[in-house]
Length: 110
Image (cartoon, rainbow, N blue to C red; front, side, top):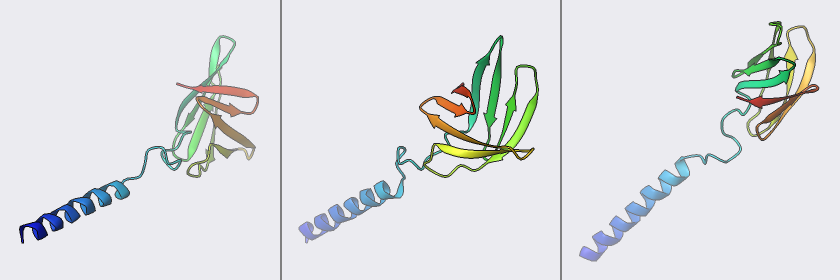
């Protein structure tokens, strides 16, 4: 009878460990957090273009203080998206490592 309780105990322990491992998503599964969110900078003369992404919108501030706003949609696991400025212009944006390509500019996450 002792052995039977020991076997059931081991089975219960294995089940708890198995459920806890399968219940948590891996950090590197490609479907993690949005890689665009944050502040990105691109040097220009004596200043910077600053690109700030939130969950679904962005702002671009030029070195002279001109601000443009727009929206985008990020699909889980992808490192490229299409951005739509408020005036209707569309741009493709892609991320490679710590660099973001937007039009002719390359931004670095800060």
